[in-house]
Length: 198
Image 1 (cartoon, rainbow, N blue to C red):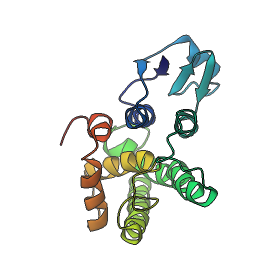
Image 2: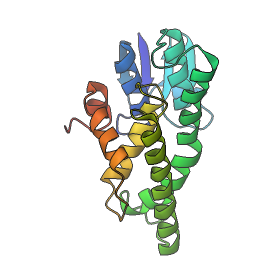
Image 3: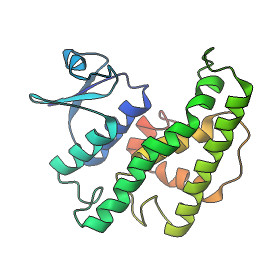
Image 4: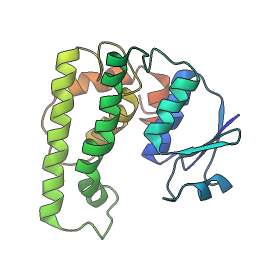
C-alpha cells in the first residue's frame, strides 16, 4: 500500500491526500518515517510506493496520475497535458511565492515575518495572482485548465482556499468564488482542502 509521509496539516501533503482520494488510491499516512532521510531538503511530503521513494509534491501528483492511469486528471494528449501541467507549475513558482510572506505574518504569526512593507507587498502580489486565476476561470467557464476538473485544480484549489480564509484586504473575484463552491462538491476537497467545512 502507498505510504504518505508528512503531517496532514501541510498544504503540500494535502495535495497528495486529495489526489489519492480523487484517483481512488489506498494509502496510509504517517507524520514521519525513515523515507524522510531520502529527501535532501528534509521536507514533506515523501511517498513510498513499495521500494520507490519520491519527494516534491507536484512531481508526486504527476506520478500518481500516471501510474494509476488517471487520464481524466492528467490527459495523455500533449497539448491538453501541457495546459494542466502549466498551472501545476505556476502554482508552485508564482502563486506560492506571492503568498509566502503575508501568510507567514498574518496566519502563522511568525516573528521572522514582521516587516510591514513586505507584508503589504506580498498581500498585493497574492491578490494579483488570485486575479490571474479569476481571469483564467472566466475564460474556461469551469476549472483552471478547462471545463473539467483536472490535476491542476488540486494545487490551485488549495492555494485559493488559503487566499480566501486569510484575513486581509482582497478584491471581489466572482469567478474564484464560484470555483471555490464547485470544488466544495468534491469529497476530497472538503476533507483535505476545507478540513470538513462545507
